[in-house]
Length: 335
Image (cartoon, rainbow, N blue to C red; front, top):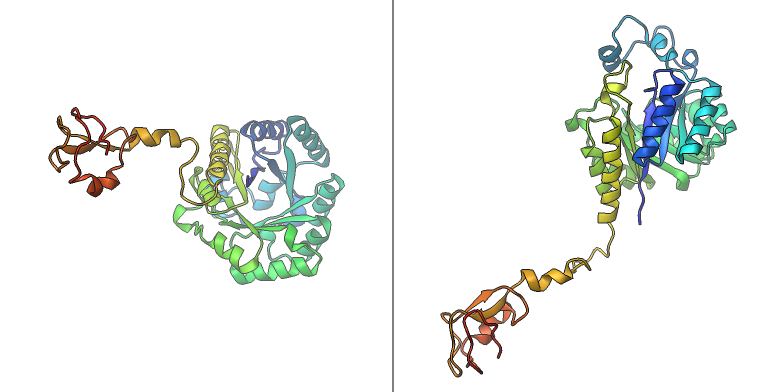
């Protein structure tokens, strides 16, 4: 069976608290996700003091502090990372994190992480792309805000630096929190697959779970979705994240869709429905009492359940033939 890789994106929804981060691991594990993903960075290495907040960040955290000040409060220490890696092992879920700078890449490599996640904002960062390509044997690339031409340039840079295309997946993504449904453009995921010949998936920032489910039905092999302990918590990403029961419902929905996509692809009765054929279909029966030798006509025969007798598809063959015996009303016709 095709299995979708489900990444529960904790991101920075721990608000800088290791205890919250552990609770997020617990929620992702209980929901049945394959990975729980955090973010690894040193804020002063990736954000200048003059960088403005995004509109959604202003809406969710106010405008008093700078982007640098906001993000600095959301850092996880090196020891936090190892503590979370250990907690993930105990809970039976894979640890993953997005590295945003060179030192953070080194940290994840030292932790034994083999899967590298390239976020949408680093898609045009050539030095970063080159280091990611040589640091992780497997790569996932998010493409929010990108054009097809930019994706091509990024893919070329990764491959030239040594990335293995067979071990690389590209996620369609929209970098607005939350993403308006009318801006999702989900079919772009299919054009990415056609243009670049990689595995494709979808990183979702819409509210709710409908769009990720639709993406799986369309062929996504990876789904990434933000989640939080509580949408009412302070912080930039909580408002556009799922709460634990919703995350669990999304995972279950994806697993159900995977099962629904199994099968030969040919239209034929399934094992579970064969028993209902004779119950739901109909047969030719006597509309009234019929005497032996009487001709079957439109008036003395009709079609009723069950479907254990002559199929109504043979109606024309039955009309005009003579009754071989007496039939009571509702009795199955035999010829």
